[in-house]
Length: 125
Length: 140
Image (cartoon, rainbow over all chains, first blue to last red; front, side, top):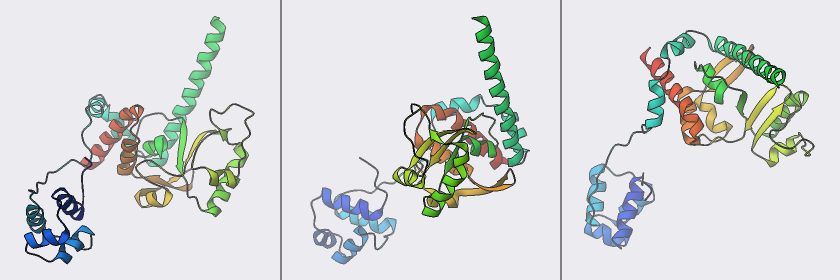
């Protein structure tokens, strides 16, 4: 199931799973139906304690957990171990324009290397 | 965006094309058509002889175009996975001067995020280098 990221979404899901109407949930939680409605529609943001009490009234316990924004990818981490950071630090000493000029020079070298490779292959046929 | 943006941020990797996210206003489409017409844009990978009209009408009818030109390969992106369109990305750019022209370059955080969102295996090594760059600049 896709993660629910809003308080209103969580409350709605808890209420649906317990097959309660908004009024029934509100009565169990000793609050007004309008409170439940506003939270579910995203018009009001409850505190974590209030949300826990409301989902509790629907028969659920609220648990929260921290999830990294950029989860670690073992392949990316493996590639990182092989990176020449001294080269990166040298690049970071240059201005953006200087970095792009270096790229141009490398591109010309690559083009020349490809041309030379093709010429050698033709000669060796 | 792409490899040139990575170079701006300090990448040592070679790139063979330019990736540009473009604004899709009518005025900008006309400007793009005028600016690139002299270098004869054509669809990359398409069989030669396939009719391709370089015009604002063509740009309006599509979104992302992988082009080959007499000056090299250019990817024109109307929308980027994980980033959105030009207006969505504008607030996540830095201003750089390239060949004495002002250019908006995607910032490092969003360059990493859009590459991650694209989810292409070939980008994993590039993402690793960009994250290493981010760590190096965080340490400064």
